[in-house]
Length: 70
Image 1 (tube, helix red, strand yellow):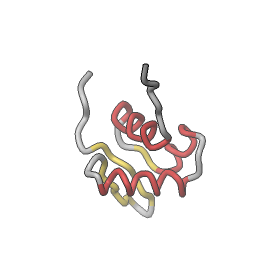
Image 2 (cartoon, one colour):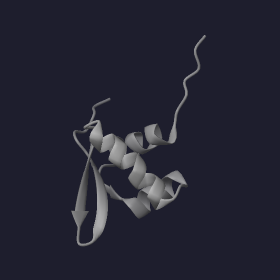
Image 3 (cartoon, one colour):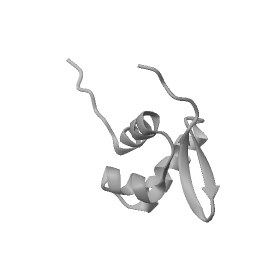
Image 4 (cartoon, one colour):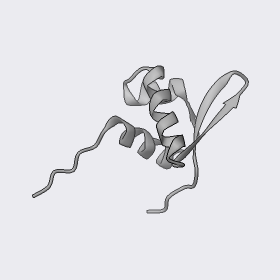
């Protein structure tokens, strides 16, 4: 029987898909990691075309590419 392993980057993607756009500070607090870690994960997700990084007034936001329906 296979275990379902959830990584931090999975948690970030789930958070964004469920809650929509959020800034790095909000994501770091929600996931209990540093803002640097959030941005590293977000850059990897952006490269995979799963999220979009948006700079608004000097603050970086992570946005879902599309909302997934349950």
